Image 1 (cartoon, rainbow, N blue to C red):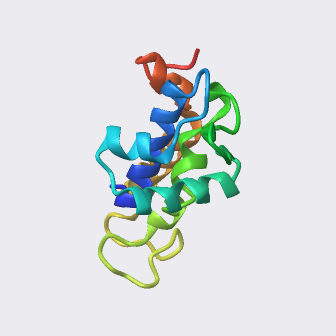
Image 2: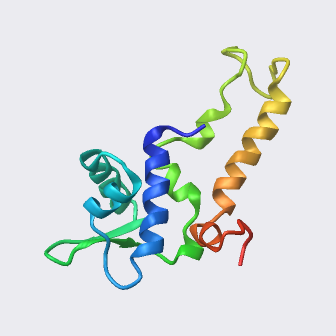
Length: 137
């Protein structure tokens, strides 16, 4: 469902949220723990820094930390930087004119599912995932 880039981003942010409680987490530590390519992960983390999801600190004791509290960081803010979630509303049957006014055979059901997916990413926070419940605190 997600691109590998968006998946790596989500996994990395969850790792940072779990491990950057006392000090920033280095790219090498994240890459090693998650078995991800370090150079590619570094680019992903810098994109997340640009969008405010993460904060980076340079230097000997540098690394990455969350840019906002985990309970205020939606999965949408992480994933949508790499995968345009709303763009997934393209017609499943490939129709170019598939819209509410010119709906294909699956349009209404697909639209409902697509909206649920967007709501899931917007309404679910990193904090909820860390709590293990997936339920708002």
